[in-house]
Image 1 (tube, rainbow, N blue to C red):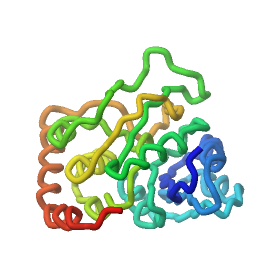
Image 2 (image 1 turned 45 degrees about the vertical axis):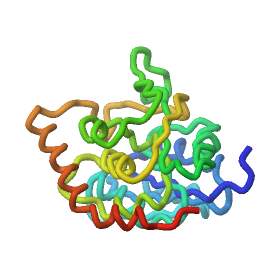
Image 3 (image 1 turned 120 degrees about the vertical axis):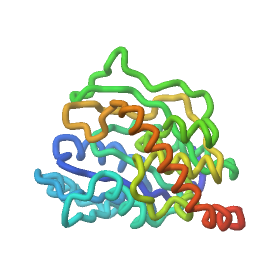
Image 4 (image 1 turned 90 degrees about the vertical axis):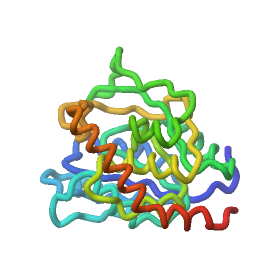
Length: 248
């Protein structure tokens, strides 16, 4: 156990997630203290996702609602902007946290040099059954800036990071690839990432999964990388300011 751990904000984007969101929220809430929070931003769901979340009646859940569908990146951006705690974790609506996830990830931040950590996970189907043949890559260590730009190794729902990273990362630049890739690039530019080669959650895959695991065309992939580089260049003043920030 970690004594006097920092409070955390778990940032979740939801959209038509009624079949799964309660199970995920319960798996998270079991690990939180009274000082922690879950910031849920619902992206104008058409099912009863909001009603399911409200029925949990837990003060640690802060529910915000988009008046129109903004997409996953802008919805996560709003959740991060609304968060208040020093350590941030991203959460999808349909996964399940293992009971040791939070404590294991927080342990990495006992090293003041670490600004972000990412874990492994277990693939499951929509019923929670493990999927043989599907696995996350065993990275052993996180890549540097150029390799991160070339290939995204950052899956948002597996990440935890210090709030200071948002001083550079927010607001998200548009157009851009996925939010988790951008956060990984920013962290590679200003901080230190560590990889936990342990499965700390069930990563559920099903027909309604928002993020599809397909590669774009070569021109699309090149465009994405150019967008990341251009965004990083525009953030150079913020990167310099981050470098001047006092460290605990």
